[in-house]
Length: 134
Image (cartoon, rainbow, N blue to C red; front, side):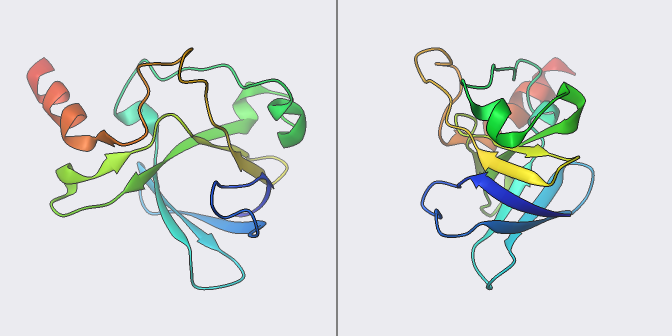
């Protein structure tokens, strides 16, 4: 689905339309509709951690025109590495999508309020935790 960025992705302020494509049940690809780059790999945070909740900063719901929580899709940027376990996820600046209205944006969470969400958390950490819980 095509999305208009009403809150820009940091460092990509001049790009305002993206195409979000599911790769599978966990991963997504976010592509610039106006050029070949950037292309982001995104991941659903719920598959890695069950503690990933936050309140949207003031004005964000309004900008994204979110009326109901179920209209929101939250994904995180993943820096893919080889092997996959060496990849890193940005939990402090999620991408929030309004699936009903085709609007999206990157939200930078307050690191004081959410100190347990990092900028580049290792995927390996979550894979090991899940293995230990089995």
